[in-house]
Structures are given as C-alpha cells and as structure tokens.
Length: 118
Image (cartoon, rainbow, N blue to C red; front, side, top):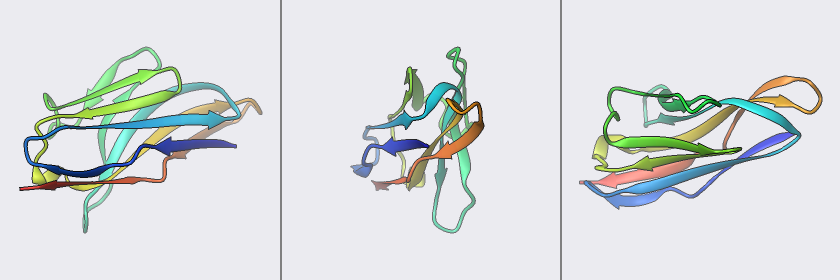
C-alpha cells in the first residue's frame, strides 16, 4: 500500500502565503510525476501544478507566477504566494507510484482545505 499524507491547510488573508506539503510512504519503489489539484465548491477538480521526477514543472495559468511546486524525493510541496479569494478550495496531492510489487498506481492525498479571505 501507498499513502499520501498532506499537511494542514488553513485560513489566510488575501495577499498572504501558505505552504502545503505531501509525503508519500509505503511500498514505494519509485515515483514519477507528482502534483497538486484543487476543487472549489461547485466546480470540478483541476490541476494546479505538476512536477516530474526530473524536476520539470507545469502550472495552471491561474497560478503561474504565484505558486511554486517543488519536490524532495517522495515529498512534494506547494508554496502559494499572493493568495486570492478564488484560490479557496480543497487541495489534493497525487503521485504516480511504481510499487515494490511491480504495479503502477495513481495515489491521492486526503485533501486539505485552504480558505483565502478578502
């Protein structure tokens, strides 16, 4: 089994910053891509940022220049700066894991709520 455990989100004022982390553990042989998604009330889940095992990153247009994804082995981070009320959502991390049982799985974190007040 593989688990992703996210740090707690929180309430932050517009213009503020917050850093999320997500640590993978369990029967991991290797992890390729990791990423962060979010889902706002009444909306579909959307990709926020992704990072490959080689460190290549991609971002949603709405967060470019404000959010930074990084990675240290099996932990992925999301540094969120200049937060806006429209960034309010439940944030989920995910990872593409090759397990020690030679199986590829896509794993999700439990989700963490980030609320940005105006």
